[in-house]
Image (tube, rainbow, N blue to C red; front, side, top):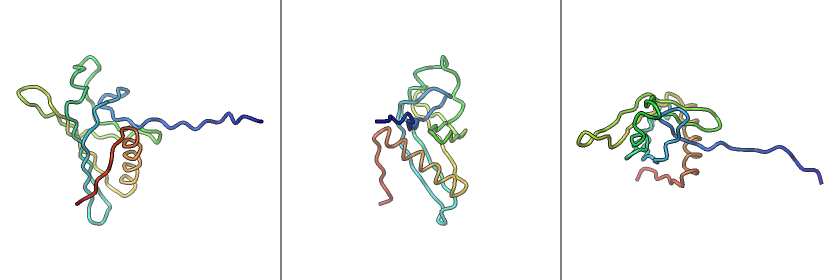
Length: 124
């Protein structure tokens, strides 16, 4: 029997604040979409992300990077919220300007959800 040497490997879908450093904290994600479906926004809220614990030893937070085997989706709309002078959450917005961006984002989220055992709940 001949062995097939080709292998199909799928890269994990990860979220990073510093390129190359996976953020293990799984965010709460809210999606909004325009009525005609042409535009949308994803809002991520990370409660106590590990990037805060690392301090500056890993580097500065330069954005939100959603990485999978198709490439990287990037947002620089990243804000830290503080409680009693200490960082508590990070909120990020990713804007999708067309249906291609929306579909690409949804493919990333499907992979990310599968990796992290997440579910999806629609509008009630």
